[in-house]
View: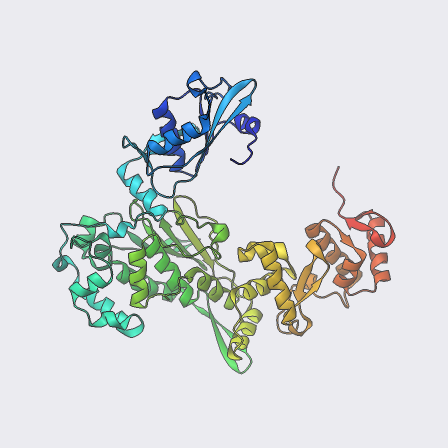
Length: 553
């Protein structure tokens, strides 16, 4: 077990991942473990009451080999067996038994059949609650332990499905998907797509993909899609509910977005370059993701909305297990409903590589527009917003020219160029956040761009800063306050120095010289003058001096 500061844990009190038990019999202990395991895992502390007072574990927790005994008890009384780590600590001269619970990789119950989950009551206090059947399904779906689209529906027959939707699928597959599927009979197609259970029953996936409105109402009541157009001044301009199968829903929404996706025309030299607000490929992937990865075990609707110049797509259910906003671009693909995901890919509606989110980011950045924003997502839903405001036309023109020359830029290069275009520079830590990558990996990407002649570097270590290489300054513009230093006025030089010091904590003579295009002696005079004006504070002396922004007392 990793070291734990129990004093600090107890001082904080019970949380979503910490449960106090003054004492506990075998069943109470196992239920507390199941409760945390069905959430994010955490700690059960036996010998600490609800108020946080250390009362000590009871005599039943005495004796030798306590840790292995408690771990064996939990494993024997959970289904599937859950492995916990157990330690005994002394706090305020009292014994506290610490049970470290992992996040379960499947829905776990007590062997007596109780499913519990962690929740927060109306007063904001954490508690353990029984799980309703639909919550068990939702949890299994969220951690990809169960593909709910494979749920057999004994009352659903092939003749209940919409023949036009089956024909639509075959037509799509023949055009850009798995052409082998286009020649199959209805029965063989359903089997090939994995939409028939082992005992021959059609599944929920078959209903979602090919069901009539009556089938959807009867067997997929949680399925709902809405398309809206909103105006900040006039409110809801259009509101359309689609109670139709998934593939038809996607195609109809794509058509509905088109009138609200105007193009800017950019002069790309001898070529005309059209920049839509939202890349068609990105829009296609985002809508498909919402339909494919939503949690069909919970009520809610998929919502696609165009509000002013922003496209937003939201769907019920948080990210699949292991996916977060912070690792979205780096984590391995994880489908919540693999059968539905496979059907979309084999129809040709989306690419089959499984890196759809990366394509969304790359296509939007290639248009000179900001990358998509997932920051509003939560445990309960996923929401992405794609801003279609003014584009960096110079970036878009440069990217298009590179592609025409056979030098298409990858996602990480586009992310770096956008950051430099917006802020004038980029650091490895900023790049790591953008790329969802470790800092050393992001630094390696930036250094590679230096080697390719796209960026220039200044400084060393954590203070190393990257800017556009000289050859790109005429092609990709920058805000005046971040243009290269040569020819800057003293005020502009001071502005650059202050911006650098604010981001990095301090600046030295060499960094100021590189930043402002000055000889070292002139850079020293600039820094000393700013220190005399008290806009900077000097520490150290002579060539080793560092200058930082004074802090208010």
